[in-house]
Amino acid sequence: MIRSMTGYGKAESTIGGVPTTLEVRCVNGRYLELSTRIPKEWSDKEGAIRETIRENVSRGSLSLYVRQEDVTTASSVSVDVDVARAYAEALRGLQRELGLAGELSIEHLLQFNAIFQGGSAKEGAPDVWPEIKLALVDCLTNLNAMRTAEGTELERDFETRLTSMEESLVVIERRSAERIPLERERLFERVRQLMGEEALDEQRLMLEIVILSEKLDVTEESVRLRSHFKFFRENLAEKQAVGRKLNFLLQEMNREVNTIGSKTNDAEIAKLVVGMKEELERIREQIQNVE
Image (cartoon, rainbow, N blue to C red):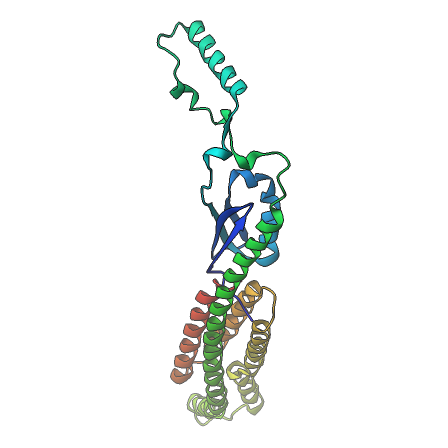
């Protein structure tokens, strides 16, 4: 079952007593690229957060956003008077040193967050990582559910297009086989016209017919193409990321179809080849979104 690289996931939880919302968005990416916007209090957890994401997502450009409600109350905030005094003395010293006019006010000290201590900064607070991981995994699970659903739709589309190409290939093989005796007779007729009453070199003529038959025969390309179809379907059923494999198989399919097209000057076969190329191009566009 393939997964799309595009998706969205959301989870809500209470972490460290604070209502928290996690959101992840993922779009196409050649590799796994991570961007995180987390509370500064979680900065020491960023490595573990990224590792958890890697365990659940293998490809894509993923962004994690975390929002926490402000639950600060007057009783949970205190002022470090010693730090405030140190800032005030430093500012007065700077004022004297530079000869600056004006009076120091409380507004100046409010610019320094270090003088305030919130309840979340208390030492000995329990480790919130288990809560963070639980919420993050829930968020990533929701993301992957959406990506899997989109992958299922992509797989249906791929199957429809593969079936269409297989049907075209059957017609191409039949048409190619029918043309060989026609082209053989056409070659005989051309030689007769060129030689007139002169004796025909039967051995040379048979050699030309063999060469012509090889040029018109698409059996080898058809066998390889069917093999690629088979491997493509098998990879669609794999559980791990297969986007790169599918892209490679698509290139091989395109090569075989081009070879078939180059072997014929038949209008019906040429039309079918163009149709197969169009199907391959549509698959190629969608493959760019497969993990």
